[in-house]
Image (cartoon, rainbow, N blue to C red):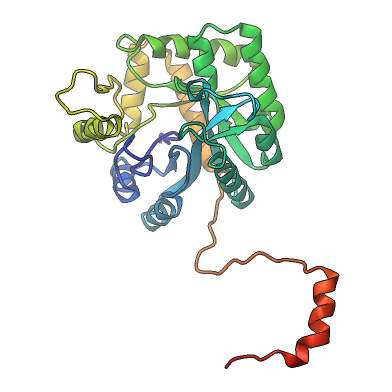
Length: 312
């Protein structure tokens, strides 16, 4: 059974539509056992999604899609920031992911949050990364015709930080004849995956639950970009961004010319990742930081504790 690992909900403000409740309902209707949440830049929908998923017997996979650069201080143009998708494998990974999201949102460049290699290295434990599609850093490097050795260096660097088994390249399940960039990126994913011995996953990177909601998503994009629906300049995505069933994924990639063995291998990698996830969010409790008071404060307390008035 196919598992989606890359998607966006209405918490990716005006870039996607679909509340966690509706996404889970669609997932259940397709008889899928697990699904991921990868909203842009933050995790506001994570707990809501987590609760709805478990209530419906579906495993929730907590991700976030963040801007990523090599050095936080060397980037001033937001268009040069490529994305990276990060997944929490367990509770520690979930807390590391929250810290990465918090860090990213303190490092805005014109409303584009970002992390860099150093903070990723610091918070890398129990994190999985997907590092390739059109808006990813490596995808942008390919489309900009950057050197092969530079791309290989970055892939190997991320694999060194997160360990080999926790880094994947993403094949995009879209009609390559309609979207030339997808064809180019997919071919390069296979090329560099072989060069660096990196496994691939597959997804169509959905932005709304069902096909019938495509126009509603385009309306959200028009609102975000300041256009009317009749404006020719508004965004009109050619991709199929609904939550695809497994047979839709297979049919698209077969039409693109890929072999059954390849397609099934990518789908199996998605499912292996889902099986490896074990995040349990602890809810219904108060969490306060534990501060170790300096000695002079402790001494002051001992001197004056008899004078303290405790209100009933």
